[in-house]
Length: 446
Ligand SMILES: Cc1ncc(COP(=O)(O)O)c(C=O)c1O
Picture 1 (cartoon, rainbow, N blue to C red):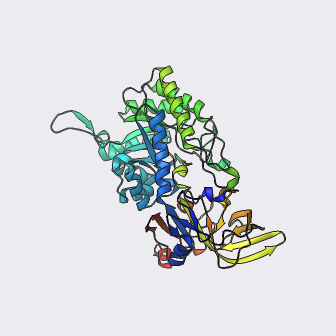
Picture 2: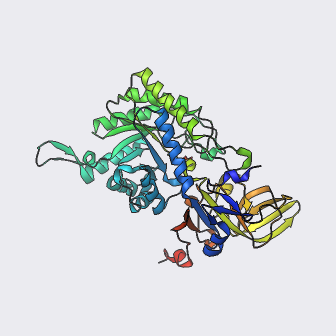
Picture 3: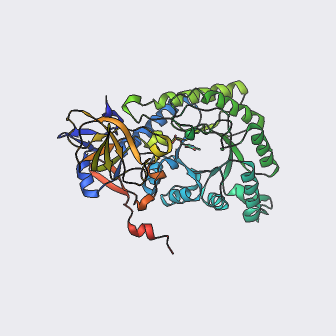
């Protein structure tokens, strides 16, 4: 059992307790209180480097990595993406606002959303370089918006008709639903299957492409995303083929963009180790795109990959303090100060986690414990039946692989105040998000 391998790459054990990037987790918890989230900068950087080197090795054309901001976004993370020249996938006006505040320029912002509001679209026109169109109604709304807010006008100097939308450099991609499911931990994280709410069928895509042509809308790419947290890239290959067939029918010429989404998985539990290699995922996609384009006589597209979880999950660790312990039948409940308000993944999909005590690591593992939070739901569980040493009230536990889809899906349930979040480097612990306060909870009340 190698639980330590689930933790960020800088994890060390010193004086029988956990350290990250040279920081004692116990001291951080004492100084910043719990629940506390910490992100390890070196682990974030390493994940990007793995994607970049695999793309360089296997894809001969231009390529980009787009960080799926839904995994975890704040200004500091948005700024971090720019240190690696990443694009950011933003779902709607809120995430666009955070990306802009974090200094992400227009050409790096790509906007997703299954039912984008007018406010989302307007924000995208103002701030983004790419909109991934989910459906035909949205496309109609985009056209109307373009006509209303920008429209065509005669260029003062050249006398030619100029579409301001085009000048504003917002290009459109169409989101395709391949009708093929990838194997994920739970059906709620599948998005590419035939009855999915996301994207358009082949016929709808072709109709959308015709609409773009007739309305002079700048159609530049095809996108699909089959699901989140899968380990087997096989189902991506037929989906890529279907998407390339569509690209051929649309007749993209010159530079065009192709994105087979994100979704590469990570290990959350020692039973799942090792982590699935990013290289095999990127290689599978790159080879399928190169071969598929050659056999169809298509130009190689600019290839975009859109990972969220596989960039940030392993970098994050949640630190909770044990408040009380109850034995109920065979079950030992370890009650902590964090739970479903900062990590709803067990409640949403029965996600499995592991953990370690922050100190006293050489104790014998002689108990099977379940870890639950302080919230008024029986589903407020983080871990079920995990072998652990006997824990005591007041001690700290560290839950690895806490960097994705925890805080971005967090809530104020029961008046929970979202935890403080630190970015750790050797000799530096920067507050990325301060802890919420009761005043924050009251801020929206009139
Ligand atoms: C459109 C889109 N792209 C990318 C992602 C990122 O997925 P993951 O975090 O599993 O890589 C998601 C997540 O569901 C998504 O909906």
